[in-house]
Length: 365
Image 1 (spheres, rainbow, N blue to C red):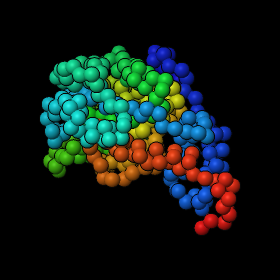
Image 2 (image 1 turned 45 degrees about the vertical axis):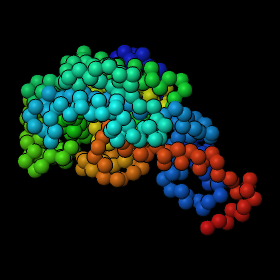
Image 3 (image 1 turned 30 degrees about the vertical axis):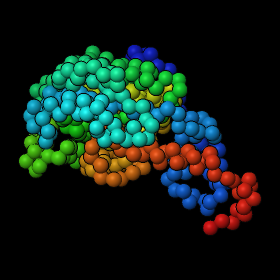
Image 4 (image 1 turned 90 degrees about the horizontal axis):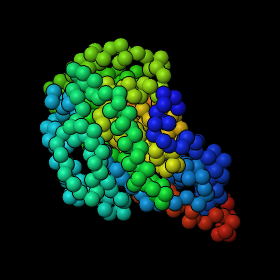
């Protein structure tokens, strides 16, 4: 990794998942009492988890969910169906236990934390709230860069530090979510700039914009691109990866997206599995992978969002999500819903009998 980013974070270098263990896991799956490949994508998932954990006795230990929340200056231009005040209100709802991610985390025995990365109004104090606040939301990126270079790098550092603190040595599974009115606008711009996919194909309705609102969102984002030229118009292949991620986050990102990038780098560094939620978190994955491509080897993509650009982004990454439930909630809800599938893949791998141990003929099915 170049540009001094990795050194600033104080993390160990990210190593590749273990290809030898992956091959051994596939062989073990073929020895289980089932027709070859009959568990489909669960087999692919189980082998992936083995490679990430570097063992043929994988386990999900103390899963932790982190929701990064922040506001966006561009929200004042009407790029969301909801006012900016909803970000603060939803943070309180997470902490009070009434949000979808709160319910799922409670029922799935997941350790839930909420991070104030830069909410516009003070979120107060709570045992499950981490104050990593940068400022009261980003600046309006249609008029000026969303943040300074120093702010962006500090947000990435704080995201990494949070994962180092709360995952600890005992945890090996990180579920990532976000909350921020206006953040699908930021995510759409970042997707366009990194992938080269046409802006109109990166822009969706977010939390439920009508046709007029969607047109306003697209016009606002096109104006932001024009302001940031020539950076936004540079072909992705012509950019240097680590500096590109920071430059684009600085121009168009959110503090929660920058912290997600840092969180992913830290999780991969400590060889933890990263369960990716929806559109905005997947955009953060793309940026983290520009800094260190091996991050992708630690990511499990939970679902395909109803935000239409998410499908295109998953295709760009050449990955298959576990679920397709037409979700568009964010906040880590899709990641939490995928956790039972992940646990099931591990249990099938470790607890099913082999043909040899069960005394079953291998001519099954």
